[in-house]
Image 1 (cartoon, helix red, strand yellow):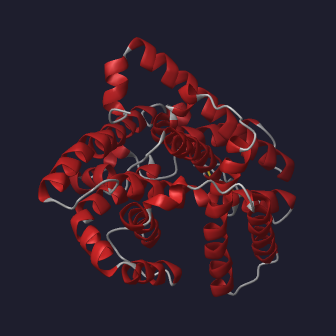
Image 2 (tube, rainbow, N blue to C red; image 1 turned 180 degrees about the vertical axis):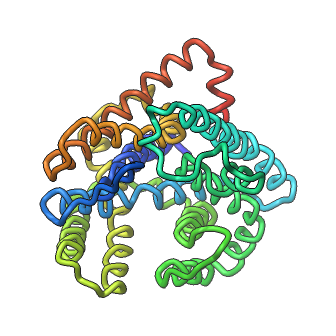
Length: 353
């Protein structure tokens, strides 16, 4: 992998991380202890659906595709390779997962002990959890719910030898199979069908079509982007007017994700390769820290802002954009300070990133 592609993957991962924060800023329904804030259909719901249920939805597929690509890069398929990769992922996936899951659980336990903050919690208090519920909250449904990505990723790492064999031997059949599973939204129980599909897509490229990523897509970026935005506009309008055909909405969503990935990939080449635009690589290093820290901090910030302001459509839209921006700034600042004063601890809680 050359320097251009390496930086491209880092930039796209960072941008995708920012999109995830905005995706989670969706506030058409906000749960407080005393009330549930429901926003009526209007310009705020339209804009939020266009971004959070549209543009931002390419982020997770991009993450899994990149993860699959990097996992199988230069892999020969030997047992020693998979053992080595598995051991490495214990450090980069399992350790951060457990640290942040337990840390947020303990932090919530502390916050719930403060009576003045009771209004911001609507679920069962952690102090009342059974042993089974504590284990579930740590391993299966962590309070920082974005950790589901790491959970699914670890499942895929465990399945990696099988996936490698299927992709290596059956090629397009394996790709078609996981496409069908994703497209028809079949329940895999142990992990998401979207996780599997896009991880396999990245894996397939790494194993069979590695050369295509070396090509710069400098033409067609605008066309791909316009098609992507047009599909999202149609889907958002249907959602706005409560179109109830779930298959049509799902079809438009999945097509928009595929075209959106192509648009994002080609936009990078168009903007960076053609224009010679520079990127700040230092900021890119904080993608994972933003990932693990932004939730549930963002949810708290949204609730505080709603509590302190009027609950109307304009305020909802302002909070939708303001809350993630504030959260990202806090994450970057906290990451910079922590990395400066405790670099070894920072690397530990971020899996060596």
